[in-house]
Image (cartoon, rainbow, N blue to C red; front, side, top):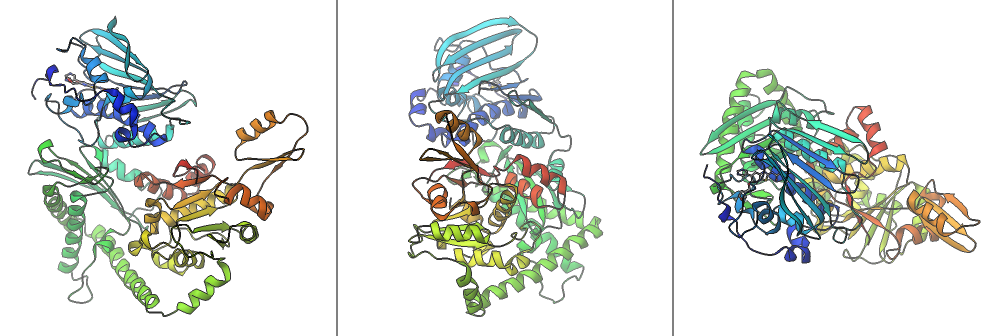
Length: 634
Ligand code: 28F
């Protein structure tokens, strides 16, 4: 490795630019953007570990809203830079001082992140960096978006090495945000899965919560974790190999569920949109299983083949590649898709060869998986036929009759403005029909509990009346044929009671949308309505509170005699009240359902929907927030 060179730091732009347009650097200034600050700092610590320095990373959410990240790597160099400033000052105040990760001979990690620590500083009210290195403890402090408050100075002596960064996001930039222990610990756990020697700790000082992750079995543990609440068909299959300088490590396991869940990483950075490595993996497993089936006469007809989708039913897999910098290529707007062409052929051949060998050695496992794949093939062919029948007008009148009884359609036929409310229960449906603006709002009351999306197969789902009605009302197809552009509605809004049952129905519906109409979520068209929890009347004035805090505030603002009603269900509101509080675009709040992390959503969905009761109970009590990230006021 080349010696790092402090002159290699490039000085490109001032921190002002970052403060002017934060979105350009961290995506957004909501909760997600604020967490991005943590990832930037954590990624630097991870890089140090990937390079073989240090094995422990700690993240602390402090009581004052700041975050501390610490590693036990080499410590940021503390010498002087040619500019007359200390190296840490340069690194933390000059944008793209990330010469660090390339010219400095410091091996690149992901190549995806790395807009760097200076961006975090630019967007922080306070930042402190403490460095353990060269027998010294050195500290530098910044404030107000990267102004030096106290230059680098020695504050003590120590034989330890490492870097500690503490920062407080600027409240003027991140409004009403706070750090989430769950979000941070989930991401850190992922890091621990990918880096066998790493121990991570996450501590929430405010809520007194603490977790520690360390996995000796890496990807195997990752897949076991993904399938924790599912019924698995065999032990995790794990293989790895290196070809053309590309290192491939894969773990995979089938469950009795109907869903596939493939996660991929390149140099420890998640490739959310897949890319050439995923394509190669899929081709590799399809070939390996087809070969095996053919060679063992498992096909009924001579020209039988299994589709990729059949071979992936019930599959959970993690693909991790290490690619040298010169071969790295990312695509897509968020650079979450691997473009490197070699990654495709390398992953395909490693997968094919390793799996072929495995199947030959493990006949029982091979037959179990193939039996499932064959069943999938039969079911999918049946579903395809049913869809074709529907397209050709068969059964059409039946569907329309079904719809006409339940759906209260909007007068407008404009998919750019129309809204569809999915309403729990018939009585609430009645209020919603009475209260809505019929010009653009349609109401679909749902009876009973919607079918469980995790356990049901596509076939079962299509037979369920509630689900069928939703599919036909939205009118944009389902599963692989779903296209959000065909949706009859700009917003599909789930409206349930604000109680545990309501939360459960929400989750069932979310599961269904997540599995079978994911495009609707990705297009930002799925919402959750927020009915008020309380009505407070003071004299002639009437107020609504959506949280307990709001209620307390209202009580403070209206001293004296007040009457408070707690709404147990939507049905308790009359149509006018429901309109005013929950449906009127001028006064309501909606939560936009936002799945930014399929793996975690997947995990949550299976915790909730899987066979085991305990995790489900805990989840409902703790996480009514689910995958809803931003509070979107429409
Ligand atoms: C809590 C966050 O940021 N850890 C880091 C290092 C180590 C080196 C380094 C970082 C040198 C010249 C830029 C040390 N010794 N944790 C962290 N640990 N950065 S950030 O180098 C930065 C470059 O320009 C390091 C030798 N080489 C590199």
